[in-house]
Length: 243
Image (tube, rainbow, N blue to C red; front, side):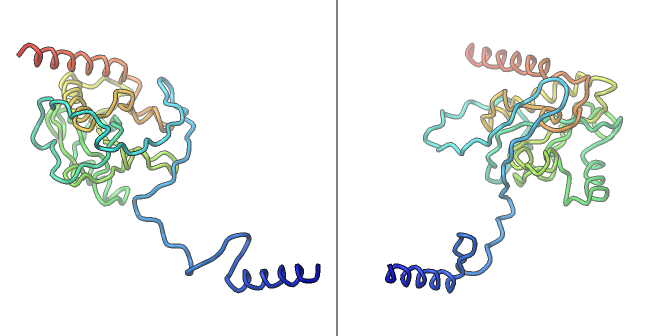
């Protein structure tokens, strides 16, 4: 018994000398700061009206050899092809500006000067004929660099910023619907992005489905948009089969 007591006391002295506190061994000084683009996923409770996504876990990265062959890409603008290495996008998040007027340049100025961000938070802006053309797709400065967005932070969860493509339609869709030119441009853009980055329709969402907001407004129907998208996709695939 005396020998065991001496051994236990010796072990305690060794642990104390090594810096053991509260059951954790402290080695090599204070912990390093996390890399700038890491984040901690926390389940979120969605409280918007309409369709709602439940707690969404992040998807593990897929091994390239496990993925099916890339589909033929839809017709699209050359500016939509980013030159930088593709980011692992897995969401498309649709917003409205909540304003009657606007453009990528005016929103960029507001995000820089009003919110003190480094640049425009969205990846794409679709005009309504005020600051840019009706249905004109403007490519934000983040997209060519494949840079994370600043458009859909949910609490301290950055899932939809780091892995979500932010598209903003100019207009206040609590008061009116998107123009036909905007709806057609959004359909064409999302059709391309979903095919290019293999984003499932279930991951095409509105801001209000994951955040405490009505964005993109009560006059925007995601169900109607997805029906239009699927019809356009079917028509395109039918045409390709006929050729």
